[in-house]
Image 1 (tube, helix red, strand yellow):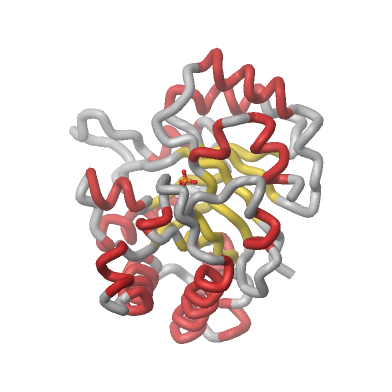
Image 2 (tube, rainbow, N blue to C red):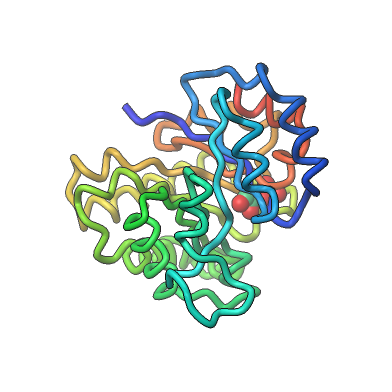
Length: 248
Ligand SMILES: O=C(CO)COP(=O)(O)O
């Protein structure tokens, strides 16, 4: 049985003060132990968030990292720095990183392998643009992103990988893929993973949907047969919405 995972992706939002107020608001209210609740936050918040959420069900993740452990990479963050902060998760290959920071499938793959090596679970994002969907390329794009992103992940590590299917046209636009559209692509993604790893291992991988998820549509999405969670941007910033999302 795969444990559902609802993760907030705060993107470039919140000061330390705002983050601590958020934790204060949600503490004791995020108590659905059947669901894994995660907040993926900017680097500046991670230490405080980790401390403030001690003793709660909330896990903390980063939104990116470099694949090298150290070096002359001005402005980057090393996997070991995240490990030192005891990060549970790291988002890798978000479409905004692919789009604005030229992250390739190859770089995504290096980061995924490094995250697993330092024992931080990667949330690997895949998804098509509107043009690609309209050209009927959704499945091909997701297949390449999944196969290349997860290349050389060891059989015994596969269950630690979370895949987030985020159609780019549904991110921050208010346009959600219908629950059925999301389910169809997610079930295809599992077929792709099955093609590489076999059914038994592929059945352990959790696959989330992301793109305009909010309290009003989260249950429909989570009730789909193949969807194991949600990666939520905008709606995860508001404490009352985050509580509703996790207690869907
Ligand atoms: O990109 C997303 C999560 O990673 C989705 O963002 P929104 O929920 O704001 O559409």
